[in-house]
Length: 199
Image 1 (cartoon, rainbow, N blue to C red):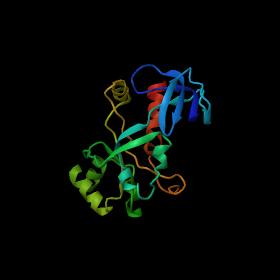
Image 2 (image 1 turned 60 degrees about the vertical axis):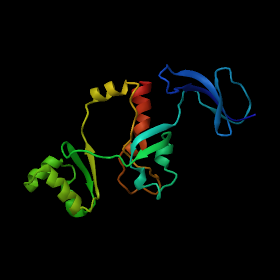
Image 3 (image 1 turned 90 degrees about the vertical axis):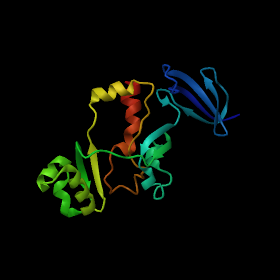
Image 4 (image 1 turned 30 degrees about the vertical axis):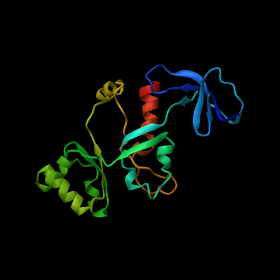
């Protein structure tokens, strides 16, 4: 008897071939059989008609190192199917950066401005504005980075050499309900499946 049997899923196996409908038998946390002919009985069965079944995602750029001890189950990643994360690889230049939120209420007026706008406001170079802002906010700043057009993303996503990084954190919807959460923490891989794979 198989531990789990997933029936009728649309399997996207990561090989690059088109999705195919199949049943998947799992025993002792390992995939044992894949195919439309798999009919074994199971301790638990999941009806997956109309759903996509894929290997666990590898998030190649993540900030879960900052939240893993607070949220060791990292529900926001598990819900997306992320099973492996690479952390500690962040870096970006000061241009085309929009400040999303800041730690102190005294800086609320800077949220929604770009680093360029803040630099002009403070009459200093963008690099200095970044340093001053981080010191002033004790590094408690969230930003949006504009670096690619949608056409660029579509072209990149069509390549077999591409891996996806959320640049998000592992979060808990209940415990973090009052916190400002970027959609990438909950939806990066959902968007990849929905927009760039399925559509």
